[in-house]
Image 1 (cartoon, one colour):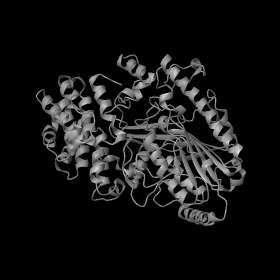
Image 2 (tube, helix red, strand yellow; image 1 turned 180 degrees about the vertical axis):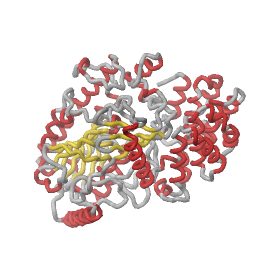
Image 3 (spheres, rainbow, N blue to C red; image 1 turned 135 degrees about the horizontal axis):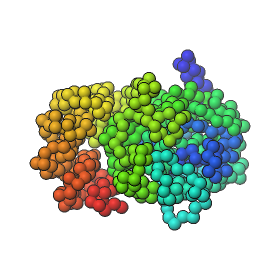
Image 4 (cartoon, helix red, strand yellow; image 1 turned 135 degrees about the vertical axis):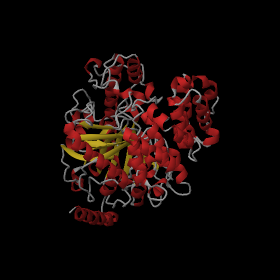
Length: 619
């Protein structure tokens, strides 16, 4: 049945594309805002003051279940611009840069080929090298007004006034009553937290006012009746445990779409003026939907699902999210949700959700929250952000919208846990998620090719075997220790050996002591990533005599001038994990180079940030 629906949709979309030369086509305006969840009046938030967007929602459709795919801007925007799951492209890590495979292109290129004038004002921030000219204009001066007379336009206006950096900007005169703000149960209720949340709502009101100017421009130019309008946020709120969190709190964003009466024929089955759609949407869906509205058949390599226009596809049962490296800190988390439940799989559960990302620690809420935790003044669930993670998390959004009651151990929810776990595994394998390779291995294996192509080469990326070892390693089950040691000693693939070493490290002292011979052998592994994990394990849980030897190896690997950033950065993270045990090596750490010409510009601040954190000189 589904194949039949899709074939009909493809036929209708092809017809629409064929008629595009002689038939008028809609203009499409996207208004985006940074770092905010659905904290708008039209989403039922009585504290919010957002009359413009509430008015847009009254005549358009509000989508209630939208995920940004990634809880931070660059990978989220990578999903938008390609219609492809970023880990399939090797582009999940914050401010990474990888090539796109042929014949993939960024979707504005397809719109331009169809005659659209495409502008972006003005943030791009993709984790991908651009495959040629993407926009007709992309700058602070870009505007749809500059098109040829009669030319349809696709225009993006990105509103940065809600960005994380703006909710902590002081001095500030609060317009929303600080005493009335709702503090999520995972945050401590302090003046700093209340002020940050109230300022977040102030910035949403300012953003709403700017959005009204863009809508007014359409009216004044006489093109409002010809223009489809989208409004959406680019990831969750710029508060700790919002932005960067792969839970609903960091991925859930607002989306409002308005179809003028002239273009109501492009409405989907769940679209209604003034309506509210329960459809599950992720950011990969935006690109094919824009193409569908323009009468263009989305290419087969796009993984997103169209939700408007003649190419509309059925609503999915699940949507997925992910977290990789966040600036200078590594992590690997995958999440999935249906209409009610969120399942989170932590492949590095020994790392807290609240790793010291320097940029996040500029927010007063982050600093006071961590200070109270360090002082022992908090109780669960307020402590969990700073503690090691559970391997699996399951949350009921209906009963627990703040996601603090982990149901993974609930007897009543074991069937749902197993089901969500299975669905996530199937999605990862289907999408050929490259995140299970160390970042350096993504680049090494794709030399002369692209990560996407490598991901589909079973010889280069035996994903099922690597994923199975990552699952076994991160389960923390003691019954897996023998298998981990055997894999570390014997497996031919360095990524399997890497996860075996990680599994031993994550289990702590007893496992490290039991696997000591294998870890010592791994210090000579051909892969520096395996070496680094083995050295960290022996430095943390080995003998006193091991410490200087292991730190010597880690400091050597942390030298970016000799090893490149994809080896240097994980080595620095390993040294930082040693805490006070590395204090005697402060001079050697301080002498490490902070940059090198080989480091891409997007990642230049990563090494200085982690060195400053280790040396007590946070920015």
